[in-house]
Length: 163
Image (cartoon, rainbow, N blue to C red):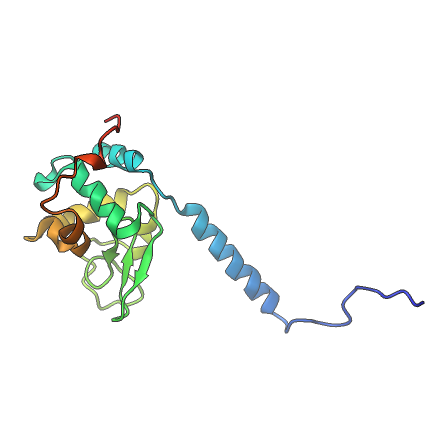
C-alpha cells in the first residue's frame, strides 16, 4: 500500500483569498471583542454616572426601558433600514440624521461616526441621546419608547439595583 501525503499539491485558493479571509475574520473578532451586553442594573448605574437620572424629566427607568426594547442592552447592535440608513448601538440611533455613516450628505447632528455609537463605554452614545432628547419629542423620538415604556410603571427596570 502506498503512503499518501496530506500536503496540498498546489494552491487550493486563488492568491490573496486567504489574506482576504483572514482580514474578514480579524474584523469580526475585533468588532465582537468591543461589544458589550449590559445587565439591567449595570446599565442603570452607568447612565446614573452620566447624569441621565432626571435629564429632561426622564428617569433612569425610562432610559433602561428604552435600551432594552431597542437593543436588548447590546452596545454593538446595528439594524439596517430599507432606506439604507442604520440604527446604531444600545439606543439604536439612526444614521439618517444623527451620525455619520458612509453617506456624507447626512446632517450628523451628533458630530460622531455611527461606529462610535457602538463603543461599550457609552460616552458618545449618551451625549448623542441627550441631543436627541432635546428635540421637542424627547424620548418619544424613539418608537420603542412610545410603544413599550411611555405612560407605564417602569419602576421594575431599576428595582433591586444598587443606585
